[in-house]
Length: 365
Image (cartoon, rainbow, N blue to C red; front, top):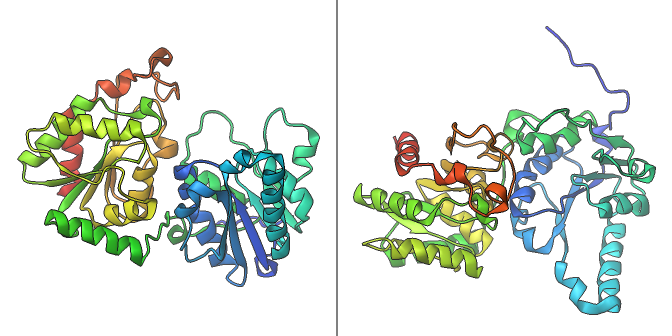
């Protein structure tokens, strides 16, 4: 039997007293980093673990059983003027300094994480190698994660966990799941909505048609066709959309094409409530978006439609799922904002209702 070779510069997990994990990205990115907290807590149960994220993404991590405190950076601080922003930044820095971190794990290329490692002076600091950065970037960290060669072929959840592997912590299978805890208030609010529709948990399909990036979206007529077919089969469908005008307009366009409108909670749910709704559903159907990751995090089977973005890196994680993607477009995943930058992705537009319905049938069975 082969044995792992111990790292010469491994961090002794038993000596970690307090750790900070920094993830300054969008909602889905933050949620996909949730296994880092679970794995770190499992291997260093004595450690207090905090998170630093943008304020609008904090609900992705609050109530996580492995996290003591979620610190937040509000993008609106820039609207406070120089003095107001400086005051808010100083308050955050003092709050972080008071925690006395001996381990900081920085999971993005944001310069703020490097500067915090320099200012807070933890015993250990883990960062990512970034091509073209000056020497002071690498010098901000005691450990750098090895950069993959070639295109990304591993899921982002595993890539995030590489920061722990770099310091000698090998995550177990049970520690790699996404975690989102809706909380009692969100569960109660969703139960009220469902009761108003005459629904209970487990007897409906949750469909979230939109993404904040519209080049990831399936055409409205296809989505409406799918919902109509599901309804014809006897399934109750609950539609959701973010509060943004664009997403609500897309959902309205789907509803307008239906002979019998689906149940809708368009723009009415918080992120926690969205998680509670997804957990109550028997199936989630959507595109590459934060709600798709939320559904996976609460354990609901997922049908995910992928076009220009990469399903190997960003597909549903840790739950029964089906990815519906074109095999006739060798150019995908390209990451481009629609073909030629035209906002419409041909690889998505050509996916058929039958393809998505077949994937749903497989999971419902």
